[in-house]
Every structure is written in C-alpha cells, then in structure tokens.
Length: 123
View 1 (spheres, rainbow, N blue to C red):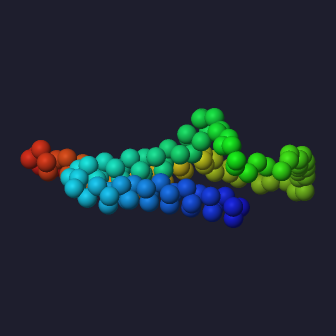
View 2: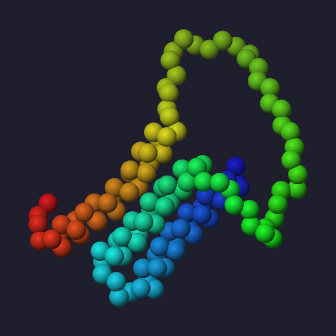
View 3: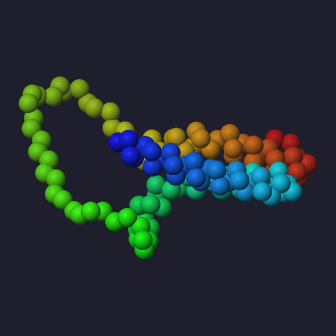
C-alpha cells in the first residue's frame, strides 16, 4: 500500500512540477498560455488512470524486471449472516469523477474568467 501511495505521489509531483517548470521557463508567455499549460497538466494528471488502463505497457531496456512470478490463492469464508440493510453502492468511477471535478473547478473557473476578460465581455 505504501508503494502505491509513493508511486502516485511521485507521478503527480512529476506531472505538476513539469507544468510549473514550463511556466517558469517560458516567463514571457501571456497568462492565458500559462493557464493552458497548467490546465493541461491537471488534465493529464486526472486522465492518467484511464490512460494507464487503456494504453499498453512499455518495457524499457535496462529497467529492472520483476524477479519472477508467483501464485497467490485467496480464500474467503463467511462467518455470520449479514443484516438486511442495503449497502451503499459507490462506484469508483463516480468517486474519481467527483474528485476530478472538485480539483479542476477552480482552475476551469479561472480559465473561463481569463477568457471572458480578454474578449471584453462580462460573466
């Protein structure tokens, strides 16, 4: 579990750090372009789980390969009866979508305000 959390923190830090570094390297960019770079970084961060599931795995030469494969057998036993109360059915995709929307909402609103202010309109 710790390895999974460390991997997620490393990847997210790398993606967001690269977006921030690009904004700092190209300091002459307009705010609209900087917002677009940061928005793309957040979108990549949020789409990463879907891309990892859809795209094939790439094995790099020289990278560590797993030592071997093993077999794990899991057995599950029911000890008691469950209550008749219905269990909440929370979809992982729904949780992910809610978290993605919550994380992106401030950035999307800032991007929208910037676009409206550049066109001279009002919200």
